[in-house]
Image (tube, rainbow, N blue to C red; front, side):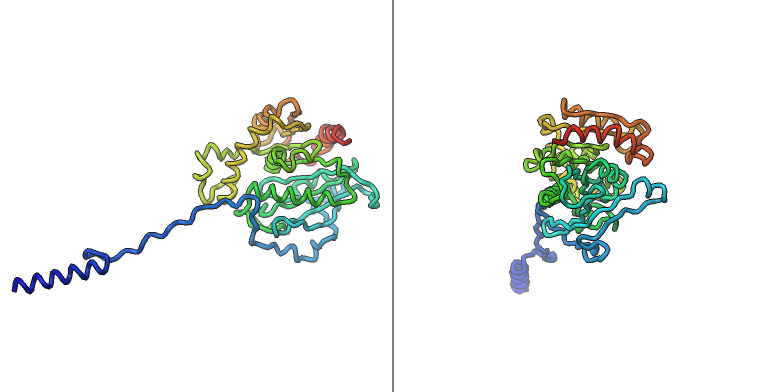
Length: 335
């Protein structure tokens, strides 16, 4: 009996060894997690915006912004021509607005206008006519994935948008602008509002573009995301996070961490004129934040506060902002 018991025990032991267990259920080997790889500016976004196939936005069609009331329409209405620019196999919705009376033989100074966070090119609606009337061509575009809803007409999803995809778009649109016969290639000016201002700062630090513009206009540049303060290293950023009531993806956070280091180190060496304007009543970008940017740029920066101005300057302030600050500054930049 004892010998039989020992034989059974030995058989069970051999069976357990063959199954890789000592009496407990076999466990699945742990799956190796795929390391995150930051796509940088090379990202091609999978989402194709149906606006590209919409006849209303076909190449060469006329674009006109919408207004809240007739008074605003009379004061600020402008028209532009729709163009589609390719950026990493995606379509970027672009509008070129030229001074009235342009017959195709003149060459105008060009203002490239970068919109802010969770927005579109329509952010610049109140500026374009005044710039056109003063003899400037305006080139506006929707960043890929630039809006969390459906307002953007460019390809891309908001959660795939990053500062590098935006920089790629700026480069693509600048390359397109250089093919235009109605703009003066020696007089390219850059303007950025809010996070478009942050993108302008990044452009000012970009090896390919920093010398392309005669000067830069920054309207309430948003540099307060402070991703560096939130996360010790870029590898620490989460898959997503809340920013200004929106959810941004890992690519955005990773790129923000990178560029928050780059701009503060590089801006003191920027050698072109920069005008910084911000509203005294701006609740999004504080005056001291813009002052820090101006101080970092140094002697090439001019900083002014528009009293009673909000983050988006009100229509009733446009005459003061344009004729009092922006146009005199631009006049000093045109060769």
